[in-house]
Amino acid sequence: MRILLLGSGGQLGARLAELLPALGAVTALDRPQLDFNRPESLPALLDAVRSDIIVNAAAYTAVDRAESEPELARRLNAEAPAVLAESARRHGSLLVQYSTDYVFDGTARAPYDEQVPTAPLGVYGATKLAGEQAIRASGAAHLILRTAWLYSNRGHNFFKTMLKLAAERDRLRVVDDQIGSPTYADLVAAATVDMLRQLFQTGGLDATRTGTYHVACAGRASWCGFARRIVARAALSDRVQVEAITTAEYPTPARRPAWSVLDCGKLARDFGIRLPDWEQGLEQCFADRAHE
Image 1 (cartoon, rainbow, N blue to C red):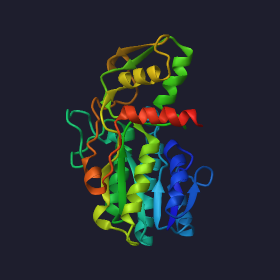
Image 2 (cartoon, one colour):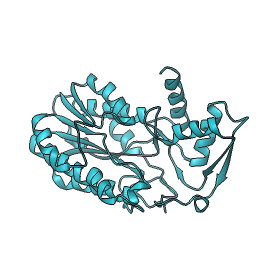
Image 3 (cartoon, rainbow, N blue to C red):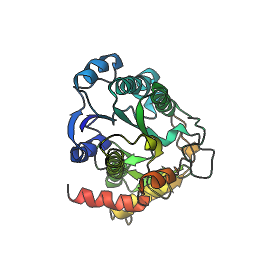
Image 4 (cartoon, rainbow, N blue to C red):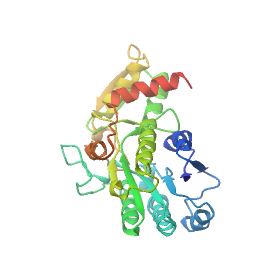
């Protein structure tokens, strides 16, 4: 198969670039070859690089900055995926798009499945949801994979920030009243490749298993709980205190859902894929870090 990977330099895209060649010939693009800030430039690229699968790992993910850059966030998260979807429809390709738990408002107390109505609280979640909607409306074959609290040993993320701060300070104050599922990006990449392998195992696309899926680690934690586990696993607990605070004590430009745990039962039923508990995912991240 011919596979086009967009955003190959990100924490998810970099791992996809390593795994996707098992499925076929991969064209991996990132800046400067790829300008999502100008969605109108994409059709020519997509026509030149004809692919059976388009995997879009590029996105605007600065949750707080999106509040002051809504148009830029919309171009990257909504308009660009709409262009990709139209190309996928014209060329008969499958589009894989990543989305977020922040499409939900956080008022639930049970894990969100794919059927729960969306209600994003901020610009980031709203633009990601607009991207989802454009893809569904296009008529293109697609996988929309919602994930949560993504981190890895690459790029900028909560995991790396906590390690950096713990090396510099003896006290960290971290929000304890937002609950989600910390998810190791490499596990999402592996799940994506497994899904694609199953979808094309008979040669053609099994369209009965396309659509929207939640792909996140099992279990749940607060940001504070996640931080404490990172600090403990890094053997810094004796020196670094992680103090629990409320969201009100740490105001940010963007509102975040208080609860954004995802129900991944559909992924297990349709593909037999179950990501491990988030603490196991963190262990794997540390193990991979030791070998880098």
